[in-house]
Image 1 (cartoon, rainbow, N blue to C red):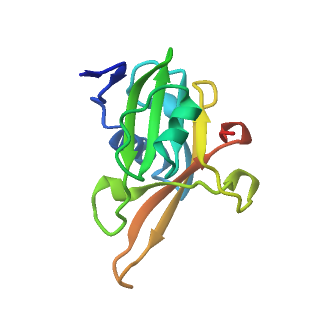
Image 2: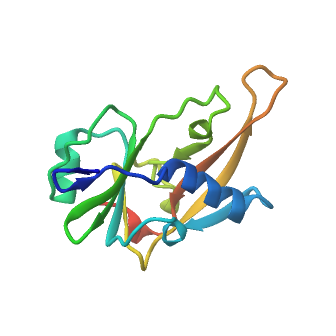
Length: 159
């Protein structure tokens, strides 16, 4: 279904990222995924935003962004000046749902600094992201596994 020039996503991006992590990183607590391995149509750039405003997103992608719902993490795939795929992630780490298992880090992990980053921008030629498995417990008994994702290199940090 088209919404203006934007396509309502028929692919569950969140689930597909989780599937990539499971297939590429299951054997170790660290690994990497490549956004080119997602089962989506062509894309020129992917932007992953922290909890920023709708206006900020529009300024950075230079397109109307009418899909803003809430303060969740936004993942937007753009091809030839149109939003082709998008999703918003709302982590709820106390549930067993898939969405509880993926978190994007927006501190500049690549440089090991505490500086916060508002967004990442990736291209098909620079689409790898590092994944770190995190195991924790809320009740001291049951372990919860989640995956933290961050850019592989400095050129993926939006300016």
